[in-house]
Amino acid sequence: MNIAEHLKTIQGHISQACSSAGRAPDDVRLVAVSKKQPDTRIDEALAAEIRCFGENRVQEAQKRWQSRRMDHPDLRLHLIGPLQSNKAADAVALFDEIESLDRPKIARALAKEMEKQNRHLPCLIQVNTGEEPQKSGILPQDLPALLKESRDLGLNVMGLMCIPPLDAPPALHFALLKKLAETYGLKGLSMGMSHDYETAVALGATRVRVGSLLFGSREK
Ligand SMILES: *Cc1c(COP(=O)(O)O)cnc(C)c1O
Image (cartoon, rainbow, N blue to C red; front, top):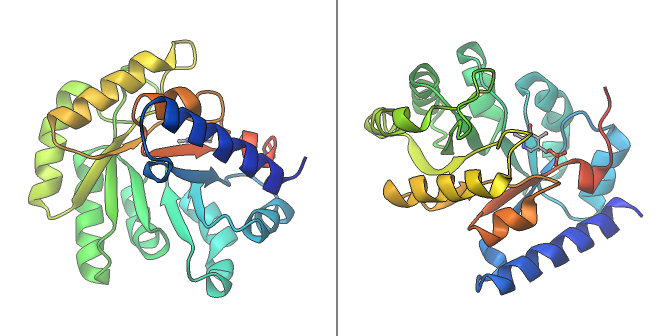
């Protein structure tokens, strides 16, 4: 199987999960997570008409996408990994959406750069739903304060993102994220990866982030 076939299979599963949940299939965007994938697979994905990609490191993403962007002006690049404030300028210049806003310092750095570059990217706040100490994301109880500060800074916060703990049933975390989004009037829900994207769609995901199932396993 190649990437085009994987894509068709995954899109079929998304459509099925949407129709079982009474949702429209175009409610859900597939973000192809291209981190640590070799160039041949990236070009194969582009040939299969995939245009929305997720990356978790700014420098790696620059190397992969800056030149390809010239040939594909319709690319949409999502930052899905933790951002350092000294990379905010590069991130704002390269990406089209930031899914991993997770603390006030980053909100301030992003707001400043977006103003400076006049690029006002939609943002999602990453929530550490499992309250895992090693994981990035704001704790659920600190979400209202970060949301308020981000909005006061002029950021366009349009949703929430989470990565459930490895050893927990993801549905509980997806349901919690959805509840938080409803509480705060946010429409975007980025949740679900290769192993649980159908569950995420059933529970309201508007973006699923699929890497290895689409591309194959990553380089070390
Ligand atoms: C790597 C990554 C993914 C994709 O994971 P797969 O299991 O390969 O689908 C999704 N989201 C984030 C934040 C990631 O870092």
